[in-house]
Image 1 (cartoon, rainbow, N blue to C red):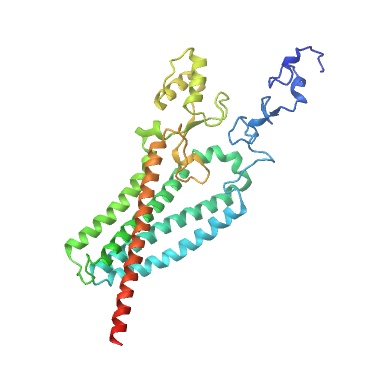
Image 2 (cartoon, rainbow, N blue to C red; image 1 turned 135 degrees about the vertical axis):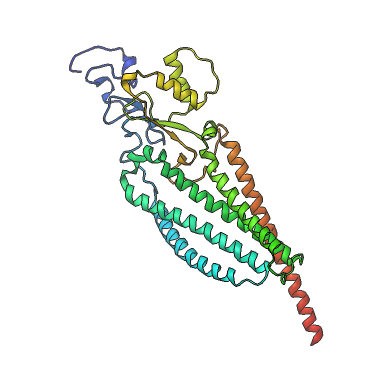
Length: 358
């Protein structure tokens, strides 16, 4: 416009600024301009959940800026359920602990021990919800701009581990407790059996197994030697304008192949990607700052990533945990159907005896 420079019509509104004053892209309706930089992206990439602008304005704006807990109902649920679960489970723990001490037989001790474990699990989930509500209050409207730092923060992973351990431990404890109760109802476990060393050791082994398996599943995604299965991308220093958002392995391959020339199309390991990206910058630049987007960083709430696609490297792990959860739910449901049926038959027999006597 100001310089009266002539351009082919094909270069107008093509997402590339060809004029010094950017007038060839100024009044176009097919793109979005990043706020603090001369970068244009297709309009469909605005508010699509992926960062395409270095200043994050394509996702952090008046139309689609997000908070840690996006809706008022989520904020209320996290706060109310978090407070309720914490307070009530602390009381339940104290009550259950006192009743455990007073247990006279192995059946009573087993029931109360696993109820105690369920209370501990629910307390962990309550603490997770309280932490989530507190972080949402602290971040408030600033979360969108700090989202990349939060998702790659170790605290997010720790929060995810806390919630996962609580959820799995509760599920596994309920599964074993339901089986114990079925066994009791079927009269294969005598209610009057005293607490002996063998029974106590067996109970402790079951509790240890529940806790150990829950912790193992929760921390497995953070194992360094398994990063090729669980790391979803890398977050680079914002000053490095070559990498935007959380580039995954495929996006790294595209950038690296342009820099190094033709590369054989094959899966890259994160160790090799780290080495190749560091070699792209001179020693004068210093150490290339980057952080991993871990398994629990798939969402701001840092929950276990239950929803995966066929292209996610962690899909087999997630599907196996989902299958395990499904089996546990099936056992619990089946157990209580058996217990209900057995209780109904027992009530009918007692009714018949009562009628015969009278």
